[in-house]
Image 1 (cartoon, rainbow, N blue to C red):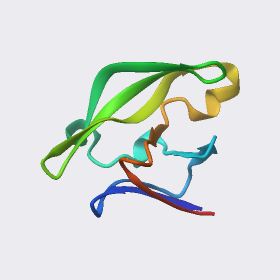
Image 2 (image 1 turned 30 degrees about the vertical axis):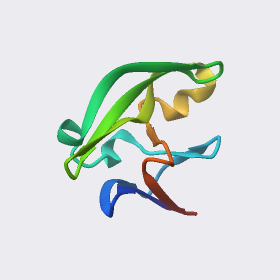
Image 3 (image 1 turned 120 degrees about the vertical axis):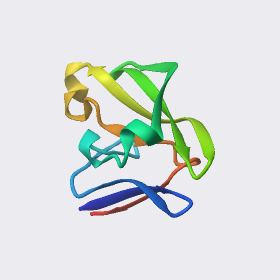
Length: 100
């Protein structure tokens, strides 16, 4: 089991343990590369009726910013506790590869 998230060939997350939920790979927080320089929290949020309220990051990479390209659930409902703080990415903004 292995998953990678990259932008223009630059790896921003990589892990051998991930959660796959509703067609999205959720990366554990410790798999994110350079989170303090690459990921910027935004004020954007969304609500999922079974996961909770999602918070978002913009990704700063290779001289450009991808607005609200990643999300995570800082507080989850019970059914989604396994993805608390895990990070997922919009597939139209970040290249995701996964091997089971």
